[in-house]
Each structure stands twice: as structure tokens, then as C-alpha cells.
Image (cartoon, rainbow, N blue to C red; front, side, top):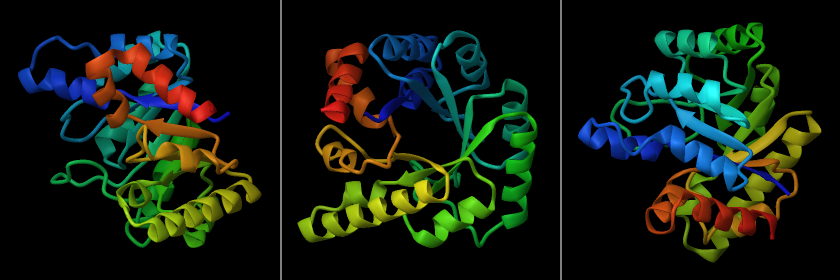
Amino acid sequence: MARLSVNIDHIATLRQARRVKEPEPIAAALLAELAGAEGITVHLRKDRRHIQERDLEILRATIKTKLNLEMGTNEEIVKIALRVRPDLATLVPEKEEEITTEGGLDFSRNDSRLKEVISLLHDRKIMVSLFIDPTSSNIKKAHRYNSDTVEIHTGHYAETKNELEIATELEKIAGAAALARKLGLGVNAGHGLDYQNVKKVCLIEEIQEFSIGHSIIARACLVGIKEAVAEMLKLIGG
């Protein structure tokens, strides 16, 4: 059974909408753990639109499972990561104007900075994952860059409605996952996965962990965090 890491960013989004103290992302993380989640994911963005540095520090001190920090290569954010030392740092592309992360890392841009950040994180004994689109070239690049894990971007699959295109996207994800495992990389997957589309991706045995946020938090607004996480875990494990 693959693990589930719950992204709690949008608990913080709701809090930041009013710049008040609630809802509390830390409480959401602890409830997710109680429901069976094996990891908590947060994205500390340069613009601080949801998760704040304070949240990251408290999560590091309180959660009992794995802390996965999604981050860009901005110097300030890297310094924070090196100080807080999450269990896993997932490097993602980041644009100021985007609503959410729009795709995997572009290895043709800023190669030297990406390599430098990976090295800095490894020096602090922080495991590194690279968020990438599911292609063999990206998997091979991640391996050459000395990444420990890849997180396969499932957004294109999640957005596709045509059955033939869905099958094509699943084939891409499966091929990328198989190659990653063959090269000794850990394999995570995430972006756009929900209660309707996750089951088909779960059939890909090489995927070891799913990072899911928006769908779980949206469901939690109706049934609560513990129930929303439990429902997703049932789908992943079933």
C-alpha cells in the first residue's frame, strides 16, 4: 500500500484570507496523522500566500510522521529549509502569478542553481525529491542530479477527460515510475489527484507515496479532516 502525505496548504489559505489565527494548520496536520496519514506536506512560497515560516517551524517540532517541504530555489527559502531541516525537500518550479504549481521542473533552466541547492540540502542530511513531468529524460536527469526521490506530476492526467488520453497519461506515469525505481529512485506522485481519479494511479505499483492536498481539504470542509483522510486512505489501499 502506498503512503499518503497530506498537503495542508489550503488550511493556511483560509486563515490568511482574514489574517487571523484560525483555522490552525498545525491542528489539521495532527488530525491527518491521527487518521493515518504517513506524512504532512507544505509549500513555503516566496510570496507566503498560505504557509508561513512559523507554521513550518511548529510542524517540525510537533508532527510524528514525515515532514515534506515543497520549495523553490529562492535563497531565502533555501536558508529556512537548511535551518528547519524537513525530512524531505521537494524542489518545485515557482512563479509569482501562478494559482498553483503548473508543471514539473524545467531542467533546461538554471541547472547550476538546482544542482547547488540539492548539494546544500544533502549536506544537511535532508532527502531531496524533484517534481517532474513523467518523461524518461526527466527521470534520467533527476538521477544524474543525485536526487533521492522524484515526485511525478500527475496534473495532466487529472485534467484530461478523454479516455484515450487518460490511458496515454497513465502509461507515461507508469513508464516514468518504472524507470525511476530501476535507477534506484524513490517514487512519489501528486497534483490534481482526487477521490474520483486516484484509483487508476494507485494501480501503478512503483508509486510509493501520494501527495494530495486540495481535494482532501475541500472534502474536509464538509466531513472534517479525519474523515476526509480516512476516505482517501481507503481508496489508496483498496
